[in-house]
Amino acid sequence: MISIVVPAHNEGSVIARTLSQWVTALASEEVDVVVVCNGCMDDTAAVARGFEPTLRVVESEIASKTHALNLGDQMSSGFPRIYVDADILISIDAIRALAKRLAQGDVLAVAPTADINLTGCSWMIRKYYDIRSRLPSSREGIGWSGVYALSEAGRRRFGKFPDVTADDTYVRLQFGMNERETLPDVTSTVFPPRTWLQLIAIRTRAYRGTFDLARRFPDLQKNMGEANDSRLLALLSKPRLWLGLVIYCLVNIIARYRATRGLRSGAHLWHRDETSRTALSTDLLK
Image (tube, rainbow, N blue to C red; front, side, top):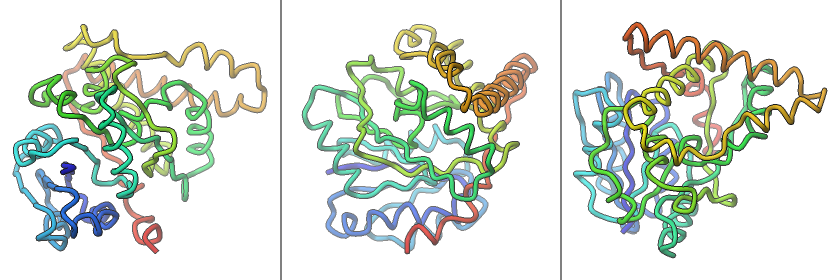
């Protein structure tokens, strides 16, 4: 049986959107889903319980994604084990495709390709993601798609999830390039920030997570994959992309600076984007 773990913190506005994609499989017991509501102060648990008894809902007072992932693991026994962010859309057919790929046995971790939904985004956000889509990092599903799937052997690669911000990057770095794969024909829908300031905040969190991993787990850096630098330089040869390049670089320069400053000061802020959680939930299910 396929096990799915969904960590959810104050996701009452979107959790039904995610879970409703799997209703048929839930009813047939094809998948075992555990929703771990962690530190919620809204109706996330109540909404998720609307899908019972075909899934299980666990509540924790600790607002921590990695703690939620560990609780979900404790409650789950099936493989492959698929971890899905609560604000992501992924169909049951995509879930099946991830499981089928892992069943072949030659890779230990797989992920879908991120389909970035830019509905309602400002033009600057669109320019940013246009550049990002041209870079090697965009081809890494573990870290960008909000979903990753591990075989039983893959899950044994590490113990409990450590207390890190970038859990998906931590998981990706457990595997070499020949052990992980992003499936180009399998997608998950990702809803990026709708505003410039929220994008900077999210990128700051991403850099903070990456810097923290490099400091705490230096041996894993060998699995980082291809860097974006050379491709960014190549894009400079296309004048029509210059505005997007300026926006992309400016966002990341600001984010890197803020992440570095935060590390030096010892401040730890979890930047969460709310703009992508408010407007699109019901339309996508019609």
